[in-house]
Image 1 (tube, one colour):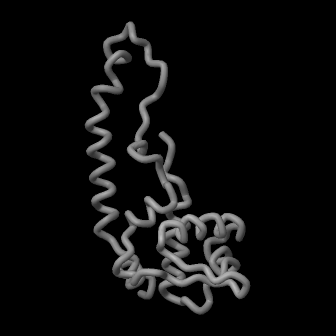
Image 2: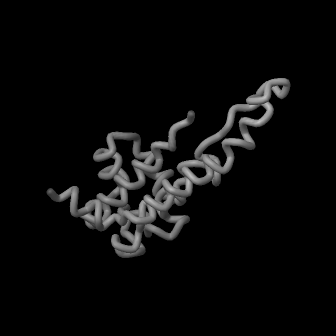
Image 3: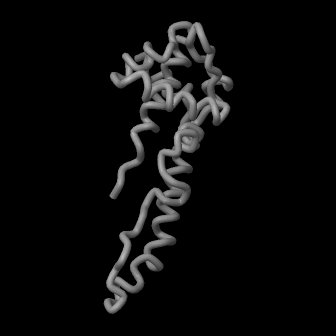
Length: 139
């Protein structure tokens, strides 16, 4: 199974930094904390900007949140960075043997279970805000 993209955790990392120290949050500062290339952070920040979560100051650099940390959920971040294709967190393998009763029916049988599992995960992400995480980072 393909994992959820690391863009998600990197985006949560970046947004958490911005919420805790907004003056210092240039792309290079975030990249150093995430320990990745600034180009990767710029791509993620572009996705967060497009989703309306951050404002990026060109030239001088730096970013700020467009919403209060208590208004940004992990689900917002997950969706902003396209951590998984819509309704594609789980994918069923292709080309099953249709001569086999399992191969012929595996996708149909699993579809509702997998949709429910993804919905449960998304519901859980919707219950956690950046503000809730920030409290834990400061301990």
